[in-house]
Amino acid sequence: MKLKLAGGAYLVSLVSILLTTTPAVAADLGGNCCADLEERIAELEATTVRKGNRKVALTVSGWVAEQIVAWDDGVERNVYQGGVGTSLSSNVTLTGSAAISNDVTAGFVIRIETNPNDPFTLSQNSDDHSDPGLPDFAFGVYPYETYWFVKSERFGKLSVGKLSPASDNASLLPYDASGTLFPANVVLFDPIRGFQLRRNGAPIVNGVSGATLTWGDIGNCTQIGVAGSGIGGDCTATHGNFVRYDSPVLGGFSFSTTWGEDDLWDVAARYAGEWHDFKIAFGGAYSHNTDESFVVPIPGTGRRDVEYYQLGGYIEHAPSKIWLLASYGYEDNQNDARVTNSDNHWYVKAGIKLKPFAMGETIPYGEYGQHNDMLSILAPDATGSRITRWGVGVVQNIDAAAMSLWLVYRSIDGEIEGGSSSGDLDTFRFVKAGAVINF
Image (cartoon, rainbow, N blue to C red):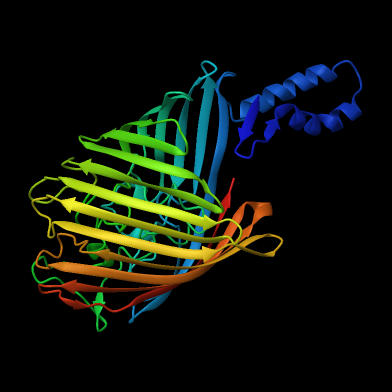
């Protein structure tokens, strides 16, 4: 049996058998050597990962990513260790495929994510996951994706199961070739969602809802939740039970669409190519969600009707390795209980890929972004809000270990307009250092 790894290598069971049986063969050159070999083959087959049959090739891939964050909210300072956020957290992915014909293949994907200390769940009062009301993706070990697919080079790919919708990170993931995706992107992956807002050092309590407000309450997406469940810049982030179609790539262009979850549907278009000395990738997506209880129901109404538009792009000058990424998202909200009718966010980052060390590229960068009017229903008397964030960082690749290290400083400011919570917020700052190893 062969197990195909992501790097293309093969683990050949016979090599292991010969290595482990060498002492026995050296000691006994008699006629029972083959019987001993057959016995060892049986033992190995009983303890080795099996691929089920000899028609489906199995690939194992994934990564392990963890970081340390030192934060300062103006009153308290502390250091936490945790993951990098769902969809980027440590995982193991099994991909199977088999050829039906010269053009058609069938297969499956099972991605198991390990997310024991998601930064979404951290706060001033807890360095461990602290929100048992969140769904499974907030912490623990869980099936992130489980689906089958049929793919044709001429007609495209059909996928069915628990998977990512076409609009998931459509303004971010398909384009970010900067090498800085893990430490820096538009989504509020960092430990901020659960942290209390402060003004002059005191927590901010809304006078109508009575809730102690968090950064998640002003960085909230309505597509997937309305009460502090926002993640700022990826408003169709949650995987679900979908049917998805991806077209073939023609001239660098591709098209995708998804339907499911009673009901969410979306369309996305992407392009990747080169123009003179520039590498270019861009695209956009539209999604419409009317699922009454998609992740977080709307208290008192159960109604949800949200449209989300997003655009993004990446450009890199190949000779100099200078790059720029930008993304934009806009939500149009028709929810009964929504505070604002629309919200938006935008984000840019730029840097350069250097090679001062033989071990791999060194990538310094800077970033800036805003999240506007992304209010949750826990601030019902507010009329607007803003999160402004900027940061600098550096990523060091270690090619021999398929590893990236990062060191980042980020500063986050905010304000709430109108109502009992109105006013500027204390600055939240942090420094984080982490690494990811791919396999």
